[in-house]
Each structure stands twice: as structure tokens, then as C-alpha cells.
Length: 273
Ligand code: ARG
Image 1 (tube, rainbow, N blue to C red):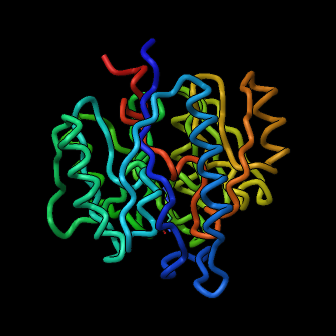
Image 2 (image 1 turned 135 degrees about the vertical axis):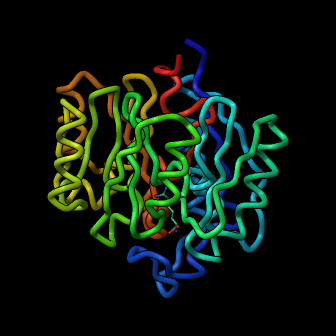
């Protein structure tokens, strides 16, 4: 199998400069040195796992450009660019699009008036695309994407403001297998997950609030924020190797391991025909 490829962007201009989710507090801020060290550790961990990590140039005035998961969604050689809900993040789009175009991907835009926040809200588990909506992305964006990709899209409403992107509360491990935080969804959303994913592991509130679901899965290795001990034990029992990386500086912005990465070979490269 070819080595996975991931896009990251160093936190040179990272900070808490606005508040667009309940985790962010301008007043509390973040430590640039700790953020750099933590990001580097994540980068080195992924490289050590055989991932080819591509790097984007950080841009002043774009503190959240580090969260490359929100750039858009990669499908084969096509990049579906995000339409951010908040203007402060929409300013990132020209940089993401330019990088993707320069790397040889075809860049596609969703219809005007739709909202879509990329791999943060759209995750493949097997052939189906699980799509979080309401807080950031909307249903129209996901429906457009389903048609464009020719894939089944399963919209799931996000009802808890602390879990405002789907990748903060749901993480596919393999086709038919995923972890999720039940309290981020309503009864209908939980039902959709239960019906479509036979092996579904619930993550309790303490680990979910440590962003345990915001993990990067590389084969049988799961890279996630440090301190999610109960989740780590469950993953081990399922045959996975959890790898903790301290990422609390990024949780101050509402992000962790997965948000800091974008799979360039597609989230589900393994199941593409
Ligand atoms: N501060 C960023 C925002 O609120 C964090 C993004 C986290 N990304 C993610 N894929 N969950 O937009």
C-alpha cells in the first residue's frame, strides 16, 4: 500500500484572535512556544509512522490555517474546497486553493450560499460519507457533494456546541468501525451511526472533552491528544495502538490531532476502486 499523505501547516501565526466556538477565549490566549513544540511532535510522530507530510506556508493574520482538515475534502485527485461559515476563516480559502492547484489537484467550488467545512465535517467510513451539519456545514453543501462524488451521504445533525465539527466527536477507524461521543448527537443521529456502523465504540465525556475522537488513524495506529486513557485502553482491546501527543494548546482553539491534518490521498483511499 502506498504511504499515506497528509497536509499540515506550522503554527507560526497560530493564536486565539477571535472566538467562533466555545473552546476559544481571546482572554486566555495560547503559548506560541508550547504550540510550536506540540505541533512539531505531532509532525514527527506522523513522519515516524511512514506518513508523507506536505507542508503549507503559514500566513500572518490567519491563526487557524493550522487546521488543514477544514481546507476542503479530497476525493481521488479532486479537491472540494470549503465554504466557511465564519468570514475570519473564509480568508484561508485562497491559500488552500492555491496550494492544492499548485500540487496538481483539480480544485472544485461548492455553490454560493452553501456552507461546508471540509474534512472537519465530512468523513468516510467505508463507502458512505458521514456529514455533520447545522453548526458549521449545512445540508445543501453535503447534498451537492454527494451528487458530485456519486457517494451516499448520511447527514448527521450536530447538537452540542462543544462538538461543532463532526471530527470532534466521530472518528472512523476502518470500514464498519468507528469511535463516537454519543452526547454530541440527537437520537436520530445516533441511530444513523448505529445502523450503518456495526462496530461503534462510545467515548465517554472526559476523553471526548480531551478531543479523543479527533484522532489521526494510520493503519492500526491511532494518534490522539494525551490523557485519553480510557479510550486508549479500549482501542488497545480492539487491536489498535494508541499514540498520545500532548496537544492542549490547540484544544484552546477547539482542535486537536485530526484537525491539524488533511489526508491528501483521501480519507478512505483504501476502499476506492
Ligand atoms: N478554531 C477553529 C475553528 O473554530 C478550530 C477548527 C478545528 N478543526 C476541526 N476540523 N475540527 O474553526
